[in-house]
Length: 104
Image 1 (cartoon, helix red, strand yellow):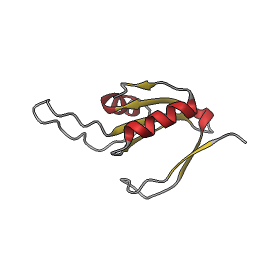
Image 2: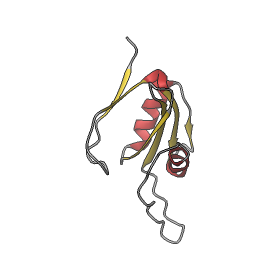
Image 3: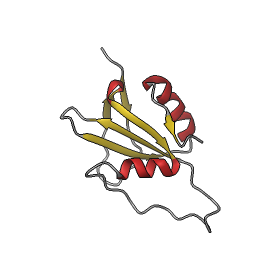
Image 4: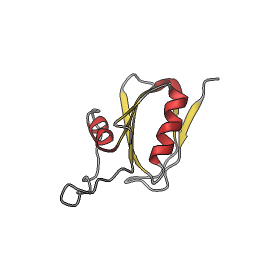
C-alpha cells in the first residue's frame, strides 16, 4: 500500500475532519507567502483574511501550503498554521520528494 498523509487539524474554519492524502498525490509544498499564493491559486479555495504584518517588518512564518490531486482529478489545497511548520515541511519534503517553495 502507498503511504498516506493524515492531517487532523486542531481547529479549522469549518467543521473538523480528518484529511487523508496519498503521498503520491501531493503536487507542491510551500511556506509563508508562497503558501498563501499557491493555495489561493487553486479553484474553489477560500481563506480567511491574511494577518497583516507590522509595517511590513514582521512576517508570519508559521504557514504551510499543501496542494494535492484529488481522486476525481481536481486540485485540492490546504493552508495550515503551526509553530512547527518548518519541521513539518521538511518531513513532508522527504516523504514526497517535492521541494519546499519559499523555504525558511
